[in-house]
Image (tube, rainbow, N blue to C red; front, top):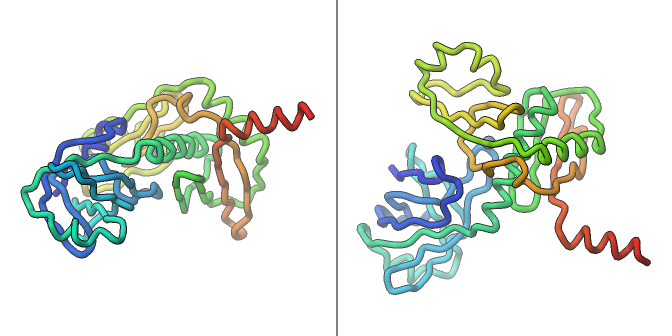
Length: 252
Ligand SMILES: [Zn+2]
């Protein structure tokens, strides 16, 4: 089992840890700030810094074959360095913060989208370059109206918080379960709840920014009819250079 530090503090960029296992898939640590691919959110990349200062580049993070395992997947070409690792060895685990920040901004934006489109989500992918959500619905969606509504929710600066709730507490609060846009998974003993104050509440294990304003400028870049009952919504960031480029175009 790896202690999942990112669950309670998504802002943590690094931590001290000990190697607990090494196999052909990668390196497991006793604790980590690396989020493993899951819930649609991409796995983190970054480095493991060894005690002599050398760095092992981590290209991806995945769940292991057993529950609770997190595997840090080294980038190719570092076989000798991986082979030199031994269980018990101390390392510093450090994520690529800029990439993770984009995951957190997009992930939080997808929750806003869930609040704006009250239909079941049956597919989700959150990367550094785009976010994609598939809604189970047949009605058409208006790209510009959605972008404007998203922009408004982002600008309203809603606080984002998470908390853990036991299944017993959930059972005692049926109204909380009813208010969730997705029903909580059962059988784990406790559920992690993500709340965007006044906007959305749902069970979620991913990483998020702490206020909707931190999402920044996002546009609905595309809406596709994937099937009779699926509407796919794509989000992308408006990059700083893009705005400058736009004003330059207008100047000419
Ligand atoms: Zn989430």
